[in-house]
Image (cartoon, rainbow, N blue to C red; front, top):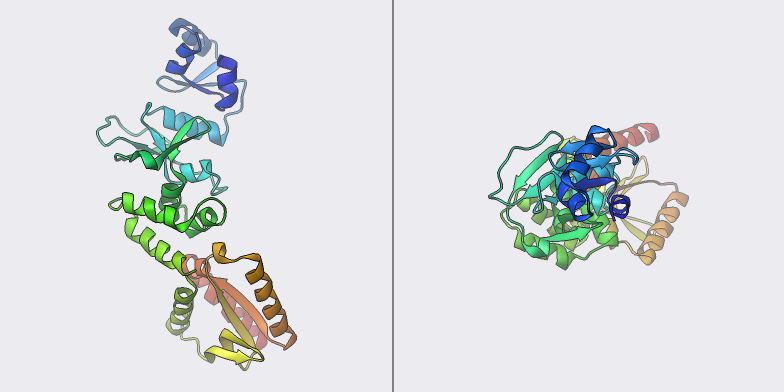
Amino acid sequence: MLDDHLRRHDGVVTLKQALECGLSVSAVQRRVQSGHWQRYAQGVYHVNDQPFTIASRIRAAVWSYGDPAVASGLAAAWWHQLTDTAPDVVEVTVPRKSHGRARPGTRVRRRDLKAADVVERRGLQVTSLDLTALEAAVGRAGGPAIMDTALQRHTELPHLWGAQVRNKGRYGSPRARILLQGARDGARSQAERLFLQLLKTHNISGWTANHRVGDYVVDVAFVTPKIVVEIDGWAFHTDPERFEKDRRRQNALILMGWQVLRFTWRDLVERPDAVIAELKRVISARS
């Protein structure tokens, strides 16, 4: 039983689990003293004959806070495979009335989660995919890409809205609402407004919005250097038919001698300076 548990749980075991597998307290102590088990926190161990992976670190961190603890934030996003970026600090959510200090390598959030917002994945309690997508999208190390990934592969907007409504007062709730409102219409119109505002803020002139080029009306055109800027919304709105249509449009513009730049809503929100720098380089090169 113990070997099976360790295989399924990234080499991590709690004292309670070890006792349930038939070990005694003294047997656990012997394994620690011999160096076969490494003590991660009080009552949480990792066996040395298995690698201490990212999953091991997150699991051990969550289990170190006891049975009610739940992985949340970017740790939960990584666990749900919404991102390849593992957090340096594991966020753990515990009930509001829980006591005790945060341990090194962890950040504690004290709040009472509703049952609908907690799931078990691979033997670990984590915030539900929908709540995770909302919270990681507005976190410092996350970003809207996480919500976009969730919508592409795993969930739908009504489910995200449900998690938003159930957790109105949480940190980041207002920004999450803005993201959801943008996602509802693909954020394309909002992205166009953001881009035009960026052009004005950086005193970039010589452009025309909604300019006709051949059979197409492009989002923004710099007529003299023949540069077209096309603005995309959220990736989850892009189906194969739309993808093919956009590529045919782009190829036609290139054949007419125009250079085409494409920016997404996420580009404009997350890296506006890089967008402007790229645009300026192209304008300079074609002037």
